[in-house]
Image (spheres, each protein chain N blue to C red):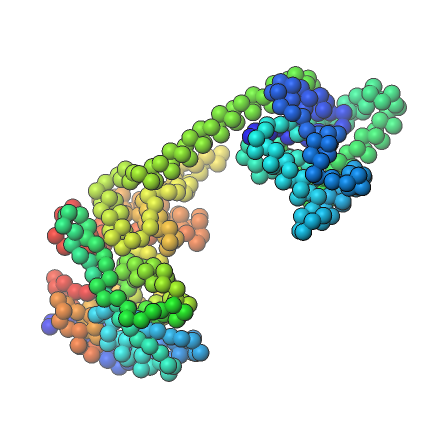
Length: 177
Length: 312
């Protein structure tokens, strides 16, 4: 895996995740908290963040995919892995690795809102406000990133590089996240 | 059903105008003198009738549950107007029916000296006595509308048309009101037809997009089940010295749930610069408006992500 430079070191990621965990601990004290990880990119972030939150909580997973439409027009977005548990009455925190256009996050929020959660908020490790097409409110944001292709700490290039302990900018010309 | 309300100053010829309108249109004239006999539910007992004739404050008295006499009056009139047209004169009808899209509100006025001359002839009184009669009437009318409806009957904003009878005859006033009424009915009819047309379009047809990129972008939004409207709003952004709009901007999409306008720019750089300038102006002139530009590169990146084998 060739990359240009490390954008966020292991230490920087760890410090930021701990700070987010501390803030979430304060905000959700006494609430029935459920962390929902959007597969696969947010898995590493979820596990570190969950351990940085000093509250009883539950975790669950969702996955969304685009399926090609046989008719040749745009594909169909659908949930390929749904939640295992009922979220009615729970305070849901949607854990995202990166929010760019915000379409997937918007789609998930709309879907979850119909299930009777007490609240639904978004925690994104990385986001790019300038790139966002829809105004998804991000309650907790790790880092603001430019329009570069990144890999590591869950982000992949053709399913490779997720296990890098840092986040790096990859060489142009290679498909990224 | 259509209704014309006539508010008038004493000795302004307003009564004559209302009566002539009622005759011309064949509509019932409802005024203070026949209101309670025409709608007996408003004053169910002789005592209520006496008090409503004597005291404006009595209209605000609760008579059953939360409802006041004023509420009952309003409801009775609205029920009646579901099936009947009418000319209504006085008793604050212009305020009672202020929100009705079927109502035309007219006020008849005249200069004080004209009204004094008319009062002298009508009541065979001196100039001082005529002035006193008019002042008392004006004060009582104003107080009634103010007390019962918390409104100012002399506020021009309460009316569609105000006519001064110093130099206008009753027939001229009636002709003016009828001309406006007919024009308004025509306009109203066109509005209703346009509304029906719009409902039909939304239900059965997609909008006509200006280019293929817009059409593909709409498909991407549909993929993610994100509700959108196509060019639903136009923002005026430049005006000339007289206040006429010289430049406006209609963003391509509005994402209803996310309160976001989207403008696609898949054209050449010259147009992108113009669009950037327009969007900047919208943000300056309409603070709080959430508007995003999707540039050519970003659009194709999004398109390719959503259509791995697609071509545009």
